[in-house]
Length: 148
Image 1 (spheres, helix red, strand yellow):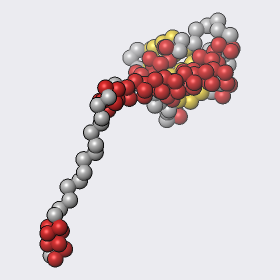
Image 2 (cartoon, rainbow, N blue to C red; image 1 turned 30 degrees about the vertical axis):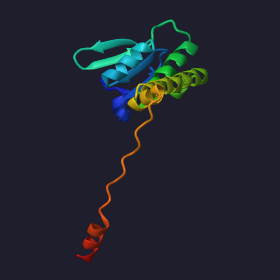
Image 3 (tube, rainbow, N blue to C red; image 1 turned 90 degrees about the vertical axis):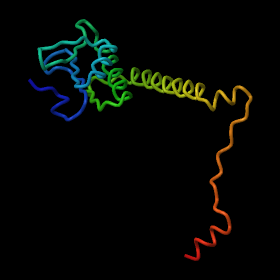
Image 4 (cartoon, rainbow, N blue to C red; image 1 turned 60 degrees about the vertical axis):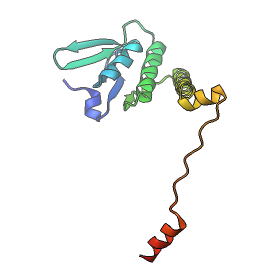
């Protein structure tokens, strides 16, 4: 049994099973499996080596596209190299999840900035320490080093 992501040399692949309406996702990393499950894919396995995910039966084509697109964007945002079958792209889902990812990153960034020691100093009204000035050798030491 071979997985598409392995054949392509990528971390994850989401595609429609040939001659079927099933949407399959395969990935190698545990973090990718978690994202797929969060996007509504169910895990299947043939122990001990094969694990893949499928969207549940009964979803309409637009819902399949939405979930597949969402999973792909979230996988890429998490640093995985993910491939999505072009027939499963949902422009509306892409725009929505991209906005969500950007807002989430902005929230994390502002939270990190707000909890940094520098931000706490600014908030308390205490001036931030100035950057240290590099020690410069005395004039005598500089002229001695030039004579050597």
